[in-house]
Length: 212
Image (cartoon, rainbow, N blue to C red; front, top):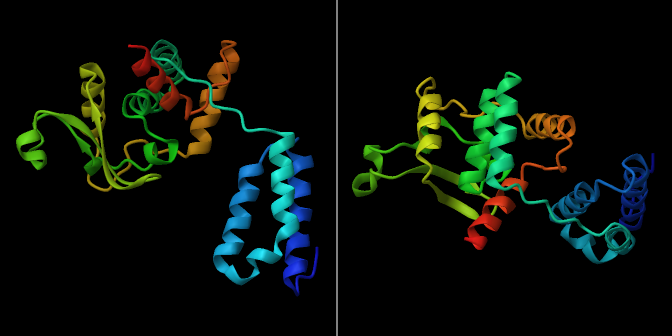
């Protein structure tokens, strides 16, 4: 462990931790290191220009392991994976995968959906728009108080059945992003599918929309 007394010591400590992450995760895990450095700069803005080595280390990491785009998950494989999750006893996860696809949700947004965020057709809270269905997203990566529409009638019905069992304040999809990724990876591995991740649903829906 390093004794951190100066900005240079802090820079060295970050570099040492980055190196440990590199070797432990075989070159993966860069984003956590980026987030950690950003947190330090947020808490200690005056040391920004003095954290030179750690900034260069992250740039070198990016060159050695360039970011890889998420593979798009089209609707057909999304339905297949959802069915397999349901057969394994993870029906809510299967529904979550399809809702994420339909609404372009990030996994953090998906797992934060509460009972009161869901609007089914006939919801009086929507006033003149009560004939539509969708999700309210209080906090998203791109801003606050956003809305995601749903047009798939079967999916709307399944989601309505799900929230019928819940009360205000309860999570619609009560699992962690990590567990969701794990179950998704298990299905992909068992059926020799591409390495899909939760974010693949956003890319998949965008791809299909573009190709129409």
